[in-house]
Image (cartoon, rainbow, N blue to C red):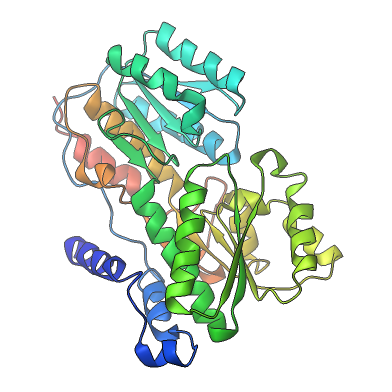
Length: 364
């Protein structure tokens, strides 16, 4: 079933930027049916569980660093990494970096000087730490990344939430907008320059909108990472007031919309909102109907994937194929899909710890 699902997904992606139906293009209409079908392929169920290979050798005693960039999602990754590391007999150490050049430099100096066996790096722009990558490679400290674009797989063998999954996310978001509004679509995509994968999302979002609806409008607006949770809502409100014909708003990461709901209410702005990778607070607002939908990524499972990959890399094993191919557990989420505790994000497979433990059980 998993292989069949992956084949279907890849077949759909191959045609993402293909020419839309001639009749629709000639009439300036939207290819709503194709867009709707792609969104529905990710609706109502999670994508396949990505890790299937058993662990051969235990990484007992290996010490791994988990870089904490300071965002809510980085914090979730660092918190959750402790459990799989403990299960594997590893030691996980959180190292706070922030997103400033000095903070990142200090964090990586700590990794290099601290006799670590591996490091998990989420959401830091490559320009902030690329000079350390060669040093990490030279010291035989394997690196696993998440939410970072443009990394060399020869240097970073596992990059989760990178180009392949970003293409899927961008396509789902664009097709959601087209399927919802058809030829009247006038949408905005909010990106964040400091988070490298959001640029890939923005580019592919606009391409997909134009492929499905050549006459539709899609603009891109930046929300700097330093404004999350403070000035970001006013950036969005000012943009929407300046563009009153906007029919929907799409966010590259849920954290961009923290605090937005009250700002929109004050400004008397009402429009459908779709959030990529919603964090716990914005998941709760999808759950209560404040935001219309989101494209959920199983953040906890991603953290376990990263630790599993480091367990294999630090013991000379090949990371799992699903991790190397950036196959995430994702799903289009509506209020009816969200139940229970969301404090650590959405879970596509609530039994994922047991699944990993079964793959690790016979390691020597």
